[in-house]
Length: 253
Image 1 (cartoon, rainbow, N blue to C red):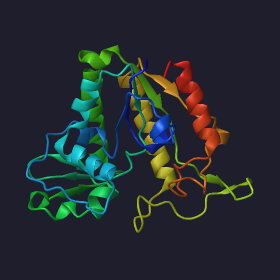
Image 2 (cartoon, rainbow, N blue to C red):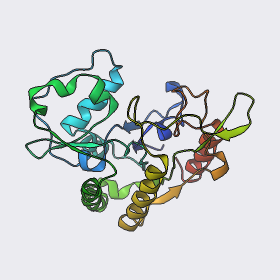
Image 3 (tube, one colour):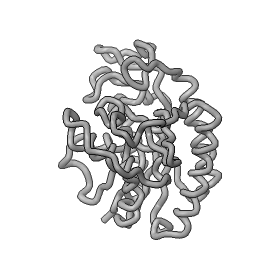
């Protein structure tokens, strides 16, 4: 049986929209970034985000404690899937040198009120500084994929882009409605993030040439207003997920 691990976002986890449809051996690590995943852990933070779901709190705690990568290694996956949609958030550098992901869950859950986060420095996602951190972390990840039990896994890159079109309620195609946001009140550039994804994916394949690429047909990369998580450039219409399911099935996942 396949043991699947995902370092990515809901675009991969949503292949199994209901909990009982997911593989029994599925491990999902999200709301992180390669530099954050490979950083030293943060100590002295307090559990926050009481209004969030259990999963949202666990995702923030994992990003701060840097437990995600150890969990992936312990899982000994047969298939390890990366997608880079969660690589949209800015990073935060703490005075001790730790890097964390500035996710909506971290921001809205009150975590940043803790003293350990005082003196933090924002690293914008689209900046050169973030790019350097990301590429350095990619080099570390590539070495880990060769030198650990993860070398036995099928490495899969779920190639994705933010959708610039959507289905309307009658099923017709139209331009995506509304300005893209990282979260409410933080608008961003869809074009800039798609260019960033292209660069990240190109760099990943150069560093991890054994990876297999899966992607949906471009015509199926449509945002879905009826998506369970709401309208977003990366909450796709059902045909997108069907394409990815078929591609994963062909790779034994």
